[in-house]
Image 1: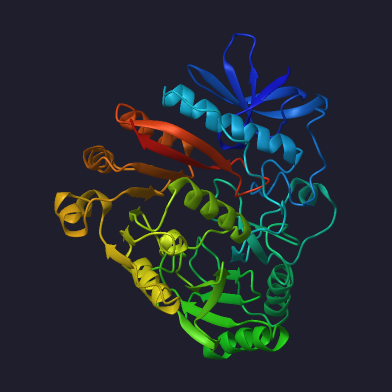
Image 2: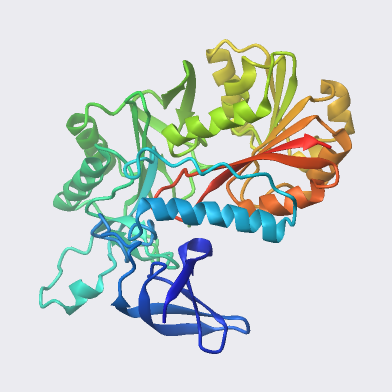
Length: 457
């Protein structure tokens, strides 16, 4: 059967003989394939291409040796031009089909200059029982070293694929990961076992910045000073370019560090990112857009859509660490940022002080509770509202408040055009969609950001 389209979550789409849609895991639009179905639903099937009878002209050879097993870059087998085409189409389809709103001509998607090695943050997991690929299982070779440092197999919380070379983060990321793994194995430092909750080494996080700064954080399951210092000293001596060497002792059942104490072993407890002369201090728990170069493009588009003259009061909803707020501040009279996470607002205030920006204010609170009539009365009627919510979109109470405020312009930045379309539909009576600009932040994946400008009718 012929694969006819690309769908949600990186799956390819074909039509079954009975007319139902089949979502296929490992095919490219234009392929002619034999499919084995794994799930059957009322309206669709889920399946895997077990044989490719005819290769699509949209195909390309994946660069990564782990492609197909890792699950991280599902579109690496599709030419980048076609990736952009399908991302653009997804945005249009969601806004038209789900939003059912009148759209202007959509500007072509802003593609990423770098299609590999573009991420500034990667997290890897240690395991003492690595996932064996089909090739390894079928070989006669006995695999004695079961240590792994890499990624979770999709859908399997306790299975780790050992990664030799990852194409997502620039050097020295691969050298650090492989170096730590080899050093720990040679020195019999135990890798973590998730099922049994035993071992020492849990996770490795690497953050880089566009100005050459480097953060490395090792997460240990328990304190063992001798072995911990052995690993940290190895990193410090082998990679002197590390700006911030950190560790966490985490005895919990999961790997999240947000409720853990981060200890600085060497260097600073943070790194700096820079954008248009603004500096942003990033610590281990900070959120920062993971593609620095494309984040700059996204923020420029957002500022352009806002159409600021220097006289406007701007509200920046879901401000995070206040990056957009500070980026637009020089062209506004006043910017008010709101965010639910206290640590993010602490970072936003520190960064504003660092950058000498005095016309921004930041407030902590759950948006649906904080963004009310009293808040507007306190800070004044906004001329422009920028909103950059999480994947779930805006709470209906926040949308209702936007409709009540009636700011002249709303710039809606979204990482999920489906929930964006739902929110735009609720504002359609009051606001007209003036401009739409998709942005590709994550080449080789199906994810796409979208910026929409709304103007009061």
